Length: 565
Ligand code: ADP
Ligand code: MG
Image (tube, rainbow, N blue to C red; front, top):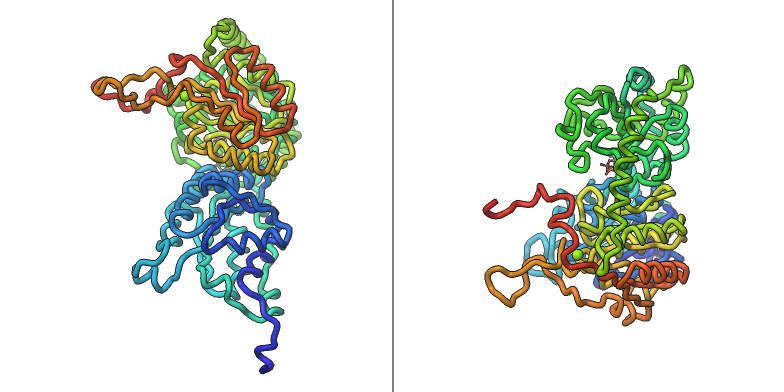
């Protein structure tokens, strides 16, 4: 043997795993297959937890929510072309929501792919990913694995976080290089999301403007939840008696039942506010683009935001405060201490009166305990039980389930609610729930419309296989939106929004060894949900909801294009 042949080498498989290990990637979510199966095995051998899913999109959603919950990119690993494209939905969703995530896919033979000669699972994956990802990279040489992984991690976390695609051509993995230089090529990423302080001038302007406000309101978004600013936010809001509105995933930064929460007077405060302080929230469709009629044309806006391009995106921002919100809140508190102020009492009184009025309206709505249940009956019952499990994370998707549940279910702790988010994505349910269970060591409740559940339902098998403490609630009204649609043209065929109202989703859970429950009354639902969460075992409650309950398109009725009307 020559000296060269005897030299100790390391291959791409080992370099990828080592690069992930030294960069605190502790879990991988994915679906095994060519060419990444052995990469997954090697990761397991090296102490990285691997969670194998039934569909790449679900695995990708798990990686995305893991990234959001841990401020560190979640990793999804897939096979080539079709598996990669399934993962792309989740990657694009992560980018849209600002969650740090890395999708790593194996890809087929470059030479064949580029000449379109018809390889197994042929696709130019890197270029396909580019428009939907924060960035897309391909590692072509084994000596670049360290750089490639470091680059993916840093890109996903820096500035506004997002989804990064990393392409690993099949030929890269078995390729070798000398052992010592291989190890030396790896990079431990340091400080990928460095503190970004805003200018002191901007902070002073923000406080000066708030000081003049007669009707201030603070809108808190999931950027603030991601940045974990609950402590400073609470101090500021309470010391200045500022009313606040949480966006859905920012619920729990301050508890929903906090006396300064204006959530139940939302239209009033947005319509009447003269100064709005946006903290890590975009003026997108979820906030009616900051425009009338919901918003006052004359309101002055202060925006705390990491991405300067977001400023003036939908309407004029009077005081942009560009920086990371954790650093910004420190400066805000410092400036505030120089001369504190309180929101005017008359304004707080106006809000209180409206809150009381709306609470009374809601209470009368909730008095109706009809069977079969409607969304209000069932979801107020879910709320009642969830208040006794304040550590439980809630995942929610659907139309009416999502919309009604957002208002009815109070969240007490930060980052304890994950939902369809910025894209209004259906299918996040099982993926988000699995990652929440894996990373938070707390019980998880996935509150699902029957339609929404269908997008990721097969991953109940994953929940059972890994024995995760997830309780799924399927609000079964037998349809997308409602279950009473009829086919007006071919009698006998189902209408376009119809699903099976008689479906027993609980039996599906039992098929994999989990606990199934069928709730026909609020009392049954209460008992079963208590039991399911307490058990810590995979459980599914099929909740019988009136097929006539719910509205088409939920709260988004105005976006629905209606034929002939
Ligand atoms: P929501 O849907 O809750 O309203 P969005 O996702 O629309 O929230 O907005 C979150 C905003 O927060 C984004 O514009 C994002 O750039 C911003 N953001 C994310 N991380 C930070 C951070 N660390 N500091 C400041 N802003 C941040
Ligand atoms: Mg439904």
